Amino acid sequence: SVDSILTVGGMTDIFAVMVGSVLISVALMLVFAGPISRFLSSNPEFEILGLFVLLLIGFVLILEAGHSAHMVVNGSPTPYIPQWIVIFILLLMFALDLYQNWWERKREVDTVALHRRRK
Image (cartoon, rainbow, N blue to C red):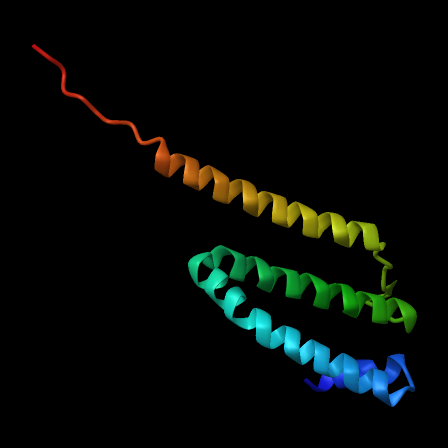
């Protein structure tokens, strides 16, 4: 994609490294596209989790850019969010999602059979 090409161009001036890194990334995308697609088809809750991760990363990037540019919003400077907070939020989201999936699978297995009372 265009953003990966621009990123590679900003990271190095060596053309061979640029081409090699783009080719490797395209090959990795082709190799993992099928397995990731099958996984997301069978586990749609991870698709929602991925959207929240993208939303969080976008929000953090906007705040970092505002902090670097010394932006003021409603009379307040844009805050700096330490990276450990973002990583903690991501780990907490994944842990809660894994726990919820485990709990739902456990509830499906532990069904209780109801019996009628004998008179």
